[in-house]
Picture 1 (cartoon, rainbow, N blue to C red):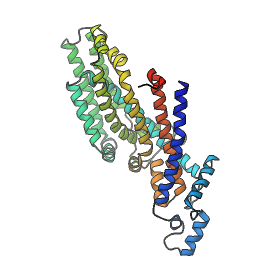
Picture 2: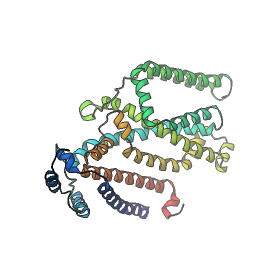
Picture 3: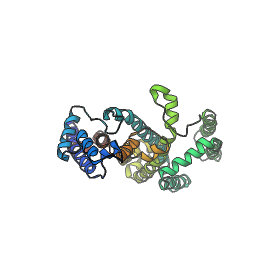
Picture 4: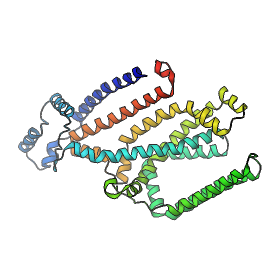
Length: 370
């Protein structure tokens, strides 16, 4: 176990070095002159030359990279070129928590949605529930994030009555289905529990409608200044936008894996012994099917950290995505270099944690076997 952890950690360092070199090379190839962003388009060649010398961008690329790397090792990310001049570290420190919060909440919400839906869909493979969730998953995967964000803004912010009616309608249909199955005799063991469950589902839908708050169209409320309640309200729509798309992909993946696992001999033997459905799905089928889910969820989290530009722009969130776009537009090379390296670091760390989860879940990987 310790050897496996050491191998994973040793893999992280060269990857980050290569990412930093690749980022520096790509930035050097980007057309544009930081001196123009500082002086403006009306500057003279002498003024541009003076600014380049003052910023240090007229030096060879290797020298600039080594200076930047030396500063980075001492905790110095440099300062921005374009006024108002700020420390790059302070700029990133103000933006990174926003993106991390959205990515974490979106990943957690997508797992909360996808695991139970995929498990029950695999259990009801080929039946009505499975067909409905399959069609819904395909629909969500096909819808671009920006369009889904605009639809959520229209209905949740400007037409909340439609959303509340939809919640009550879905709860009523689910409650009726559960109660009908119990009354029709499909569940001979304690049918009154099913009737009580139907009532609880309907009551839960009504309570959710009564307590459902209003959500802002745009903006971000920080926990330190506005409190956790306003903070969660401000990130609810962007988190829901990202989580719906990710949950559709995770549901498709886990549903297919669990449908295959449910046909394995050890699961069929458990069914023959009369094990309850909850035991078969959770204890027998979910764990061996969770490896691919963990991998894709880790990749999804890394993608959310660096790929929320459109969502951050639509909802006007001050995150890393908008910071990188602004840095490209202003030729802020130091900001861009530090931001890309930081996101790559988080992505690599997340994947390392996924590998560590493999070591914990599957004893064969501790000995280098698959």
